[in-house]
Length: 114
Ligand SMILES: [Zn+2]
Image (tube, rainbow, N blue to C red):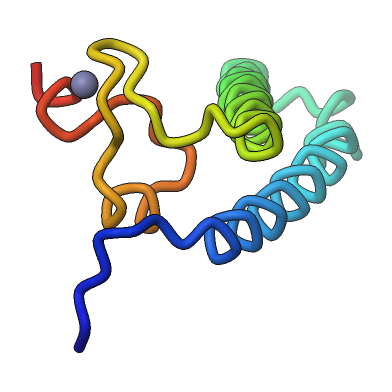
C-alpha cells in the first residue's frame, strides 16, 4: 500500500456528505420517539422513570447528532473555502491519515492528545 501524505479532499468530501446524510436521517427518525404509544397510560411501577430514562437518552443522542452535524457542515464549508485541514490550536496541517479516518477532526494528532 502506498502511503500518501497529501490529503485526498475528494475522499473526505464524499465521506462527509455520506455522514451528513446519515446523521440527518437519524435526526429525522428521532423526532418520533417510540415511547409515547400506550406507555403513557400504563400504571406499572417504574414505567415513569423508565420513560424519563428513554427520553433523556433521546435528548442526549439528539444533541450529539446535532453537534456532529454542525461539525460536518463546518468541515464542508472549510473544504470549499480552502481552510480545511488546519489545526484549530496550533495552525499546522492536520495529518492526512487522520483526516481521512476522522474527516471532522479540527485538531492535529499532537494537539488532540493534550
Ligand atoms: Zn495542532
